[in-house]
Image (cartoon, rainbow, N blue to C red; front, side, top):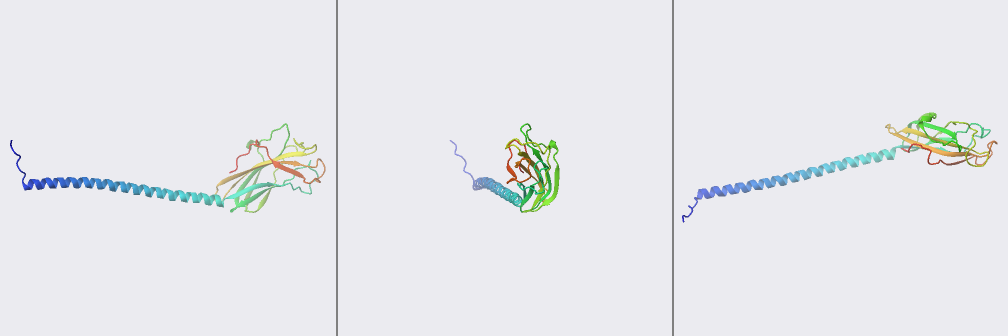
Length: 223
């Protein structure tokens, strides 16, 4: 059997260099993969951190808007003008728009009406009814404006409930308004008002009872 020819020192050196170069290439490829993974991870971390910062800023912005936005309510009181001779005459306007919050409410448009309530007619809010609109340029926080909603229908209509001679109405509507940036909001309101005292002058105490509206009136949502 023929013995393999011993390698020369130059051949052995070449093989060692080839092996070393191959190992170096493998190590370099490994290092490149590690570097790519680290780069991608760092990039993802940076993107997540940037997104979190943007989201945090957005939440802070929304919170600031909600914190500083105007709010309004409609307050319906049982006060009656002493000049009103009888509850069978024109219904007294005693609703008021009340501003609160940190900024003024602007460009207010109030659509409202006072409707006699009877057993035969179901009272339901509908923009198609074309109730009167009232406009106001602004209302400041902690200030109020009179809201003279007008009566729709016969003011002598007998109420659906209560003792004979009482008259019952629903006063309802929607007040739309904006903040200083033009963002739109709206406040619906509705109360059942029972005028006491029959056909006599305003001598009853209280002159009116104010209660919550039935749930099926159909007003839009608070916004």
